[in-house]
Length: 253
Image 1 (cartoon, helix red, strand yellow):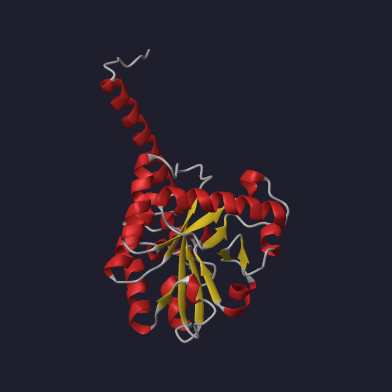
Image 2 (cartoon, helix red, strand yellow):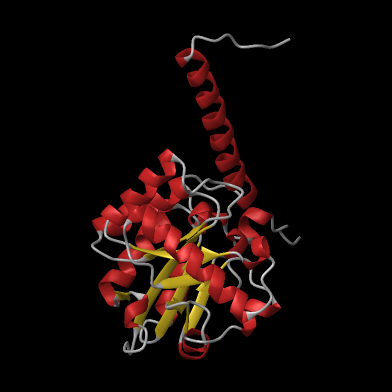
């Protein structure tokens, strides 16, 4: 009798733990090297590792701390139009400052859908605006961006740079690097560690999303639910704090 494969096994929930992330990064650190986007045109083998922070800045800080302890530098691309976090609230400004303090690069995660961008001129205009926002708030230079939720238009944008920033989806990366992503919290073919082992003497471009990495072995849906509950709890806590501060009563019923 064939054993039924459940989603936990089929989609390898167990791969996406903080401990397994640490093990994969330690393996890369020992057998290869992690580079930044500035090195992309020169490297012969090694890894460029990027985190697109589309849902959870708290998770991003956790991964950034692990990488810092291993003395490696990666890139965290931040989204100005996320429906899951407000990049410019007090807490998240501090979270970003922690990532910078840990020694990592900050990039722009850019959403063409939020602005209905359909041509390169408009793309360049808004890339520059959002680049300046990040630079002014965090007092850093932004020299790399990645698209959020690619579509036909973004996939056609293959130039090395737009608005003075390296394009993470340029032909340099499509044609010259082996690519792995954890999109939707699952692997398309193989895990992070298996991918790295197979390509250890090649050039690798790895995209990870911090929300998919957790302490427990849980489903992608549960990981997002944790972030959503955290946001709800934070909003309620702030509401009650303001009531106490202004000596107001909770109005209910």
